[in-house]
Image (tube, rainbow, N blue to C red; front, side, top):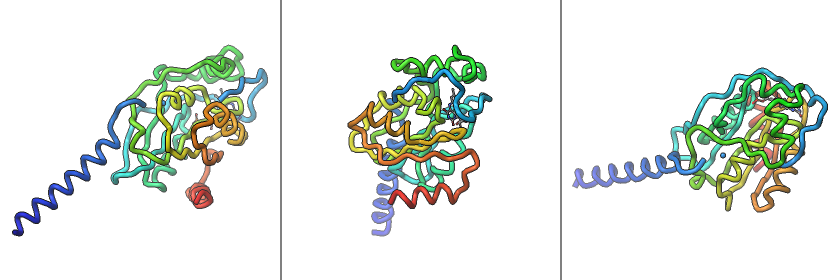
Length: 217
Ligand SMILES: Cc1cc2nc3c(=O)[nH]c(=O)nc-3n(C[C@H](O)[C@H](O)[C@H](O)COP(=O)(O)O)c2cc1C
């Protein structure tokens, strides 16, 4: 009898592990405004493309933090958010990493500015793909580029089915707020439930993040 109980316990554990593994495994992974010709407010141009792919929390979670970050600022916030929400973490990786020159917004013809000036630009995704279906709450993060979300966020959004998901946007910037990116993405994707958006500074503390999370519920 004892053996039978242990067998059932083992089977239960295996089922739970398979459920979590499928949530973390692959399938498919990834606003409109135009780049102004003047310099964006207080921006940084150093480039150290965020390193690769997905990583998950230790527990089976239905919450995902997906982010794009070129110089690590948004990445720092994303990591804190994932910790506090016990979420899986996913890096939105461009197929072609952004170099320092690509991000030099003082140069009108730099790659980032060209993309932001072209409403149809959809920078290709690289890295490991992600299946969003196990997640019902998604925190989607990005740096503000020319007041709004970088085009690769559109690539990511258009690569997935967002039906039934609640999406919280977060961003970092030199000084611009999150409102315009929220508004732009809501206009572009009216069927997606963008529930809120928050801009964090580079040095946002754990309590800045928990304060925002508390305000959402
Ligand atoms: C092409 C480009 C455009 C930017 N535009 C703005 C802007 O409009 N407003 C702003 O406050 N910061 C702007 N920034 C600064 C970034 O939003 C800021 O440095 C951000 O925290 C970088 O995040 P990351 O390190 O995760 O890439 C811009 C930066 C780049 C590269």
